[in-house]
Length: 457
Image 1 (cartoon, helix red, strand yellow):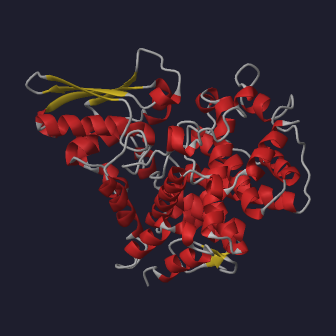
Image 2: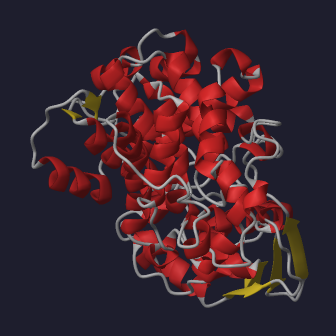
Image 3: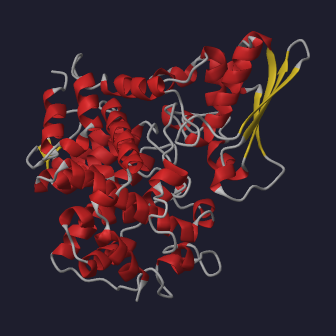
């Protein structure tokens, strides 16, 4: 039996009634967080350009463009909302995937669910199922896949989108296996495009392709069922001989569910996750020692080499570029005691105070060689003050998930701050509450309808 067949059997066997309550809880947390991040990007160029190109300004279809009243075809909505949800790089992360799990599948699942009239329970089940599928395939290929330059959000997330859409459509095992095999040829995304609009487009394409693959399979489209393990299939082409272990995919399926362990990583700052431990470390030292730009002579940020491959950007040239500059993010943390949307908008990167700090911040890799993604985020921050003091802070994991929780009020306030950019005052709290009880809705269109009615005029 091929891997696609084995995965398909597990996918079609998933039932809402079998989900642990904590899995439902964290699914809803991720869903509300993802929608919030998309609403915050209502005026961002990337999703708006994508929408213009896809629709030509014509709004006809069943699926809502989040943050608007416009409705478009399912696959177009998946691209637009997926791109929006990742446009600010504020959405959740997961160590198994080494990427962003929710944006890779949720927009396609919701868009498809609107066309089908799916219930909230159906959406939650599809979401958890998709998360599990993409994470299990990730176990076979990471961390080599990540280090080689693939963007797992896109290259692996597409399988989550496919599995979720297949479950939502009620595909049988044979159809689901074909959908996964189709998705192998729709998988794409390289990290060379980090710091540009193409990175969030990876998310849009991933969630679209997942729904597309499932819809094609439903209509009888064919694909090679050995597309994963074939000598010219996914594993060999994307990772290469000796750099993957297909035997790691099937063991421990849903035992425990990956959404619970290692679980959801919720971002506290709207920038690359690989900068967050350095930000946290800077905030700790700033508070403990009263640091200001005037009394800091030098800062050394020491992180994993694989993180520095895309975050060592001492001279960012755009707001998107700055989201991937650990130097810039640390400078903002020192200056303000926080890192916010405003620091990545307009002419913020030209701020003379930040520019003067960048020359004092060095980023270098650890001398030890951690292997797993669990150690990926560790940061040692060294600060030398103008009076000669040597200060150090170590952060192993940023504040962001089941194993290292941020205070609950920070998670809720994040949604409020994000959604307020697109929704009327007074409409944010009801939408937050509705998503928090998503499983109680008989039709997901009740929730997206609330969203549409709440947009600012």
